[in-house]
Image (tube, rainbow, N blue to C red; front, side, top):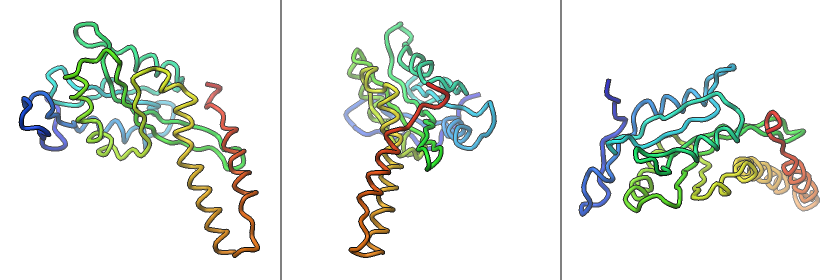
Length: 206
């Protein structure tokens, strides 16, 4: 059964062959994201890896897994190869879980665009032209682009995932300062928030 396109194919450059950069986002891509977002229990996906199909017309799900070990996910993502055995780009979403101590446990979905250095110019352009289309269709706010494995080490992904929560907390503190007036000093609370957020620990000892 052929995948059903979510949206019509678009061509971003009339001077480039239509088969190069016009790509469908299939419904299975959205369904896999919703499984990660809403499913509960041991079989809840921890990550989804996407790729552009061999005919270069659709983005499809390559793997969805409940494996929570980040290093296992990273190995699968960065070891992807094309039909010729060469390292291949991929998209992925990963459910990053972390602790903010007294503020409790948090989870943030991170979108990752993996682009090995050896990727050809044509394939690089193909993936680059569809990256934001997929990210926006999934409505994932935190995004990381990587062409080296060091760009997506756990500490980097964790920092990017937690930054949004930290910014939100600081905004609340500043709002309280404005509401209470000049006699209220927010900087101790901001400093406390920063200390809490730097003590984030990996889920399950990762």
